[in-house]
Every structure is written in structure tokens, then in C-alpha cells.
Amino acid sequence: MPELTDSFQQFERELADKLQHAHAMGLSKEHIDNTAKRIADWLMKEVQPRSPEQVLLKQMWQNGTDEERHAMSSVLHKLIEKKAPAH
Image (tube, rainbow, N blue to C red):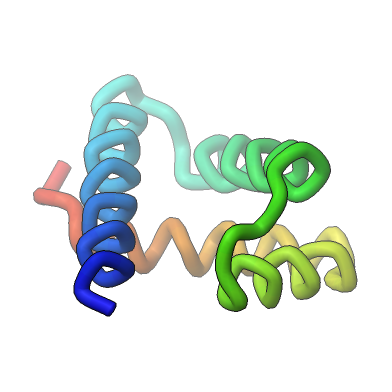
């Protein structure tokens, strides 16, 4: 299980770094959330889940409305923003 935890922590660090760069470029939260949603749409179509958690996320994404998907992207943004250094 430590491997999964380490992997997720690295994922969070990478997203936090990208989020910090996006803010530094002057991108709005809405723009970042919309971009995250487009990336997630692509991932859901093109990438096979490799864990039960990824299967659950894929099912949630596929069954959610556009508004719910936007909400999931926004929540991820908030989660990662808390882990990122202040911008």
C-alpha cells in the first residue's frame, strides 16, 4: 500500500506544481477548472483504469452530468490548491 500512497502523493505534488504555474501565468480558476474537465474527458475515453479507485472515478465521470463533472474538477482544484505553495 505504501507504493499507492507514494504514487498519489507524487500525483498531488505534480498537480500542485502545474496549478502554481497556471496561476503565475494569470489563468483564472474557471479557466483552470474547464481545462481540467477537458483533460478528464479525454482520459476517460482513452485511458483504461488501473485500480478500483480509478474504475470508480471513471464511472462517476461517465454517469455525471456536465455540471457534476465541472463540480468534480473544481473540488480537485481546491484539494490541490491547498497543497500548493501560496501564489
